Image (cartoon, rainbow, N blue to C red; front, side, top):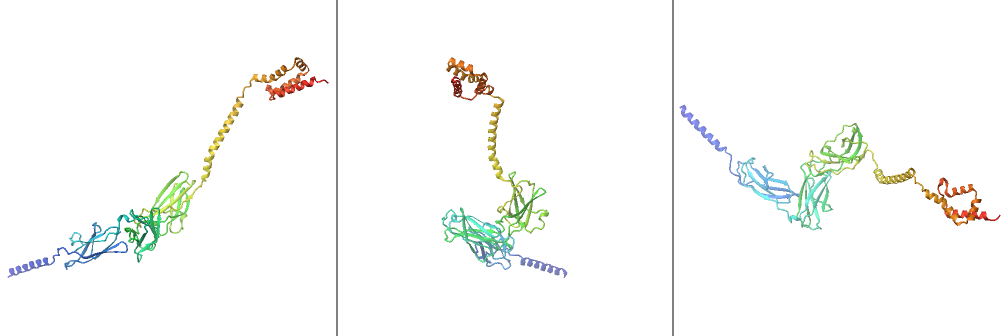
Length: 452
């Protein structure tokens, strides 16, 4: 009796196990595709896809929806029947959606259904190019672009913008031209005190006449940020080092900025640039300063020369995604001896004149010195000729009787004095002309021959 009972129990157990295995099997059939897939655009660049669950799905299936864009990027598996994305609508954007029963990507989804946004209207070569936007000092955004190749020079451009803090799309009113570039600026300050890590600004540039193709752009607020230049407050020397003190631009924390300090030396005519990631100075001179004041120590600066300092800043990757936009340079501040450059210019111009004058004086002095050291040798023949030439002429012109009478009556000392007067002292001929000498001789002869 016991053996048949055992056989019946074993048979019942096998039946229960077989029934349980068949009842717990998961459905392996492919699910039907989603229905009513549609696409719409909100704001300027927010694309939204929506769909309905598939018809005839297995009741034992927990539906999940597998979706990706036409480039098979941004794959996503989620239970929601919608998906959105911020994307520039400069070209057609397509989304493919399928249904499946698990979150495992390896499971076979249903047939994928695709829906695309319509492409922008207009000639692609009429759209603006190089559309770029920069958020200046977290206060205003400036966008610039170049006209398209197939556009009229008198095209009136319009820029529209939107971000999450705005209730509606706004138009930029401040359109201007800078050479070939066209630009527009608009205030953007509502986000500076809020968490804007996940925010962006949607931009579109077009014309109201519809003659050009619209151009879209999305600017993340964590990039394309350009701070204002800092303000240098103080420079001073201590222990052979130059200390620089400055204040950061408004709307920025010190931990979110990197710095660049440039020092120009007038003597060496060189420019030294220092990159500063964390600006701190251990110096008693800065104790008690207001918050926001930054300090940096520049080593090895000569205090007896003129040193000019200027600073610029940029955002770092601790707070922002972009760290390539430097601010403009700050106003320069100088410290040290300010040598007047006009002195060097005057010396440069006066040096050739002084050298030329010195050379002329030296040449004249050398010529005079040569005359003193090597005097000219007198010509004896010329001296005797000048001494006796006039006397011979008077002797030849006078009669023998007059010559004898003159020599007899003329005292010898007076004749010597006359010769000295005529020829000068030390045997040098006098500078009296021959005519004057002959006239004096005739007057003396006439006085001797005149009767008493």
